[in-house]
Image (cartoon, rainbow, N blue to C red):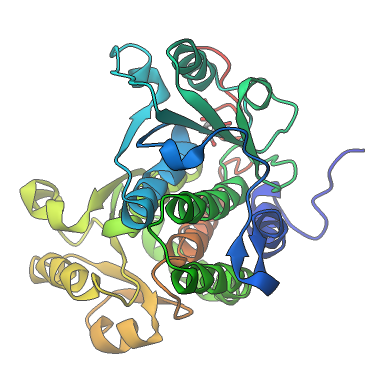
Length: 367
Ligand code: G6P
């Protein structure tokens, strides 16, 4: 049967609002909350022997991989390489035995990612695939299939598949860390408790939909928009910029907050809105000082933070978007919501074809 939009104006909006449900659904396959443990599907290779991870993906799935790199290195202390599939294929990467090659794809059919997977398989890597379509080519080729349970995603610009990918990747990082003896029982329990809170936090983020819609008109006239983030939220800045480009056709760039002074700060004036992703946490002060560098040059900032962050740094911003206060581990999932909604409302205000943006395809099966 055809998938209905229900009361939503677009599939994309429906899919954004499905995230609490589908992330919970996905986490159910990867966590045993009662025992406070992560629980992966049966793995028939020795995961504790993995000493290197190579992540390959495209588009939004690539940004999920970038977040995962922070987690794998932080929890499991395993070095991670990450590439766009189109680059990986042709750079003759060094693939030593004992490596895990991890492919992330909503469709499981993206041509460049599939070709990279086959290349890794032929070169002795153990293949793991995080895919949303369990019957896809990548699912069939994988040694370790890690499905996301986002359900069919119709909007061309990926939303719910992304947060479900992050949920799986967080569980995988924790599992690898446990198997490598890098996480104590207590630390594992703590990670599980934060992940279990994600669906409620996503709901709390979605409650700000109206406020985000009210901010959209400030972005509509812009020709260029800059997104800034740090640490595991830096990839969310990239994803925010990608979402805006994809559906509103406004040029946007994501930048690591601390890197802004090495170039993009030259662009700052009152016509370039700067969206700052800064959840409270160890990196908050650093990001805020980068934000103040923008403001000192007349830049107009939209600060996305929690109540404490907004109380501390919200003054002088063009607008603020309040998120629930969450543990840094789950901030990348929660902060996906405001960047998706902001892009959505800007696109609606501009009258673009949100679900079928020009020149883009849901699944790119050509090189
Ligand atoms: C296309 C879609 C994007 C998606 C990318 C990767 O460009 O428009 O939304 O992120 O492909 O797709 P995949 O199915 O491999 O995740």
